[in-house]
Length: 270
Image (cartoon, rainbow, N blue to C red; front, side, top):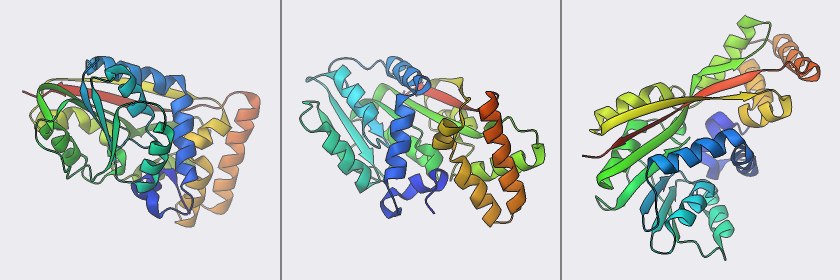
């Protein structure tokens, strides 16, 4: 069974890659994600002529936005570990006239020369890799002196669901967090950017709130998460069913509440 929390790490071997494409399209349509992405471009000082690295580009939405900023005198290199995602990104880019170089890469071992970029960013990718600090080290290696390295990541330890059953909610929320390869990456970004030698390291939190069940299920994979927790014996079938019914009833009443806090951290390469 393909699940968002674990499946993004290996999209090419998923049963249905459209699940992941659909998730990315949904996130890209939400004002919360649009706002922090725009802010990230400003913090990196992306401008016409900039040469930018986008790590974990997915369908290429952010690469397209960056390419529009840097223009014909700049360049965006967008890397991903998924051939499927890259193929879809390239198809979307056809005929756009944008200067984007989509590449298949292992983000922890980039086949890119040192000091190649003016700035580099990674967005919701580190949560899916087992050694996120190595990815940040590689991003710093290929960025020029004075350039900005920026990361936005959720911390799934902050995931909240407004259910009356605290015990079941805690079990399912913790299960969701622990099925990511690096579910706590948000709280480690500040430390990691310092440890890889960046200067002027800053971090800023922001919280996504969702109050509609259908959208929450698209973003947080609630049905599958409850089913997997049940299959692994963390909750019983009746507990999972009752919990889901409660959330759907809250949705009908207009009182559903789900949220998580994400962290955007950035620093400058000496």
